[in-house]
Length: 65
Ligand SMILES: [Zn+2]
Image (cartoon, rainbow, N blue to C red; front, side):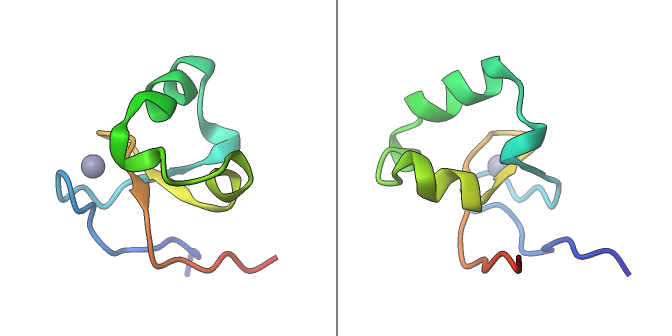
C-alpha cells in the first residue's frame, strides 16, 4: 500500500497529488500565484502535497518523516 493521501482536492476533486520535490519550476511559480496558497509560508508549502491538476495545496495532511 502506497502512502498517498486520497482526500480529493477542494477545487477540482482530483485525487492525484505531487510532493514539493516533484514540482517543476513552473509549477512552483503557479503555486505562488494562487491566492489560496499564499497563506502558507515556503516552509509550510514544502511539507504539503499539491493537487496535480490545479496545484492547490492539499490540507489536513501530516507528513510522516
Ligand atoms: Zn485541484
